[in-house]
Image (cartoon, rainbow, N blue to C red):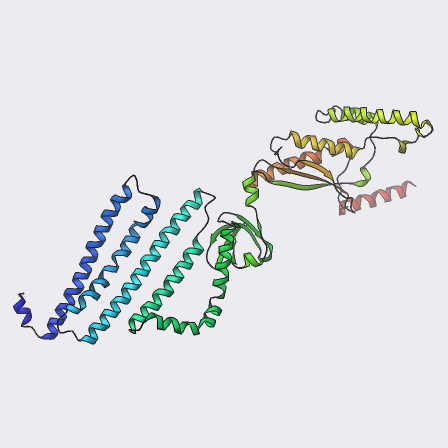
Length: 421
């Protein structure tokens, strides 16, 4: 069709043809721009000097979204060239195209933020020092959405955005109420990140909300915890600043996990050791050096005491003697120092605790050379298996409440004694 033929058409036909041509040109240019951007970006990404940030910005999804801006730009610049189009219609179409352009630019910026967040999440799996930026990305998206919404509404009603912003000032109280949790959570997120208090992958314990597990996601408003039983606990971010929580990262980074468990000794089984028992215990390799030095020390003390107060040397209470629980404690200390899976550069000891109605606790305080839960439990179990099994060698008994079987045995013994008498 020639230009003369087009000019001979009715005005509305010319307008329709102009609009159709404008739409075709807009979407053809979008395809051309998209093809050019993707072709150029693939070469730049493959270049040896391309950085990780450059690859993020040149991601196919970002460039595809960038190409979406072209049609609205073409329409808003070319709508004035359409013949016989009423001024009001032209203005409305131009304003709508500008609003669409703002929308597409906002989506482009969000795509860039998504790419940055994805890169950050990839680094989280390989670098434990990397901090999650999801809350910042979500806040950025929220701000972009608010700004884009204000500009789009202002363009559609053909008013300055400043007029809308002045109206929003009167609604600040309402906005503060609506976004109260978001503002509190963002402030808490900044403090958590700035002070390095919590990261994705940390083991968090917060008894107030029933959370005890690994941090799997840190968003603007919530933090997700995968508990040890694979349930998910969602905590508002602001609660992490208003309430206390325990972060086990320090334990993981130290390379040692603490053992702090007590073995309760039956107080009635505690007594002095005889010379025969000392000789038998001297055959234990870990205990022999201790017994040798201790016996020499006690013998020298008792000899001096007998010289100074011969009339009191016959009383056992005046002389020093080895106890079975003290000797057992020395054995436990030596056993812990010789254990190959315990850290020698951290606190390592067995200590006596205050006696209670449930016996005399002997507490083991040590750190394993691993923080893996299964290995830690296996090491701890092996240690206490051995310590409980060797108690009879020292004449000691573990404390436990009498069970139903113990009561029945006691009653039968009383019946037998009654019959014998």
